[in-house]
Amino acid sequence: AQSVTQLGSHVSVSEGALVLLRCNYSSSVPPYLFWYVQYPNQGLQLLLKYTSAATLVKGINGFEAEFKKSETSFHLTKPSAHMSDAAEYFCAVSDLGQNFVFGPGTRLSVLP
Amino acid sequence: NAGVTQTPKFRILKIGQSMTLQCAQDMNHNYMYWYRQDPGMGLKLIYYSVGAGITDKGEVPNGYNVSRSTTEDFPLRLELAAPSQTSVYFCASSYDRVGSYTFGSGTRLTVV
Image (cartoon, rainbow over all chains, first blue to last red; front, side, top):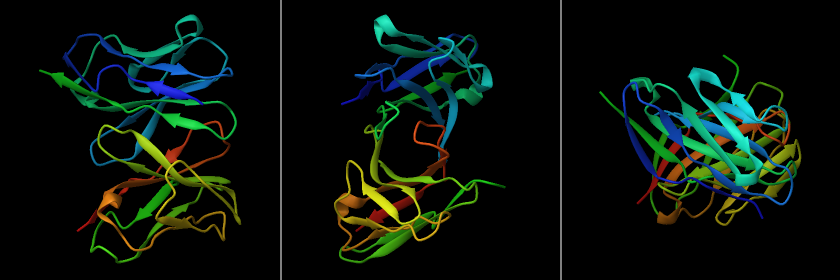
């Protein structure tokens, strides 16, 4: 069975600082990996996805994530946080079959 | 705008009442899903459908039913509402099973 762990249910950064949201996964087969963002009172939106091509994936709004097989990780980063980045972020893994699993989410706060 | 439309946005039910959450998509996606989101728990899959006339249980199907008579619509039925069903419900659709889901804006349901 697949699973996703997101370290830190709440992360706070200052505006302009580096954003690092951690995601580790377990999967018995090569996974597809995703990051979704949820703004208050909205549904989830796809930020980026890894589908076995380049290990460094660039997404919308300046976010990127790197797939590291040896560490079973897919951490999300952004060089400089903006106030508008405050939201909840979900990592998800798919094994290309019937299983698509979301992590518990990390709430990002951006301090002025 | 193309996307996934959920109605209603908010609803308060009394214990034992029934209701149907509506979901419609206009992207001609074969795959549709119902998730519930509870604080700190991420998203849990209730039911999913791989095409009209085909549905299957997800991780937490008890207390819910679905139908898929058309490609566009995927209603979720709650019979005999219980306080444990207080949650935010999201409908999503995708072109294939491996991701890039499009989410609706959610239905916030409270059972009292």
